[in-house]
Image (cartoon, rainbow, N blue to C red; front, side, top):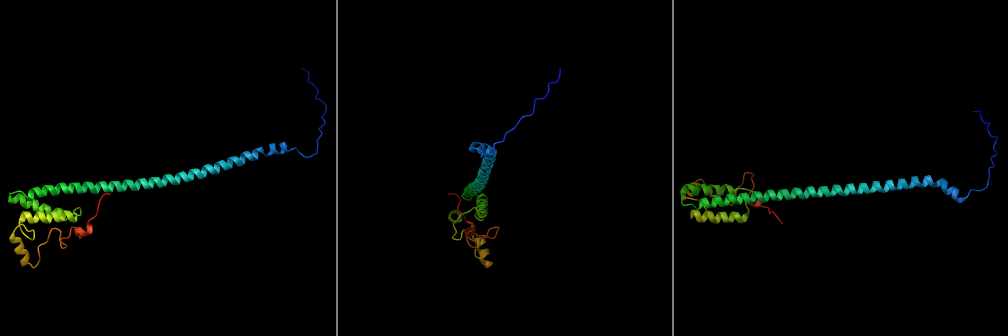
Length: 180
């Protein structure tokens, strides 16, 4: 195969007049695409930031609500168990056997010092104590009252101000309502 000679030189004619509007617009197309992409990126970034903040707030609120619900359930369960023990102690305090009666009264005394005991229940304890012991001060026999009187101290009522709990608080200091 023989090489074909190259064609002759071409003449290029340049028109130096103003460009048409569509030519200018076609040249700005890539710039418009870039600006639209940057605008879309900014809008999506702001939306993502806003959703993240909203999700974080919702998660914090859910954690707080769950913690409050758990605390309320724990307190409710504790009070229910305290009341079950109180019923057991009241049943024992009403038993005709003196040993069982003493066990029930001693258990009631311990339960009365609990921070779970409310004023209403402590009043019930006083009434039960008086009815079981038949004594105005709630002592289960006169010997203890005489021994306490001999020492210069008044016998403590179940819900008396002098009857402090293990943490140094009285029932009035630690009473709190649970539930709606």
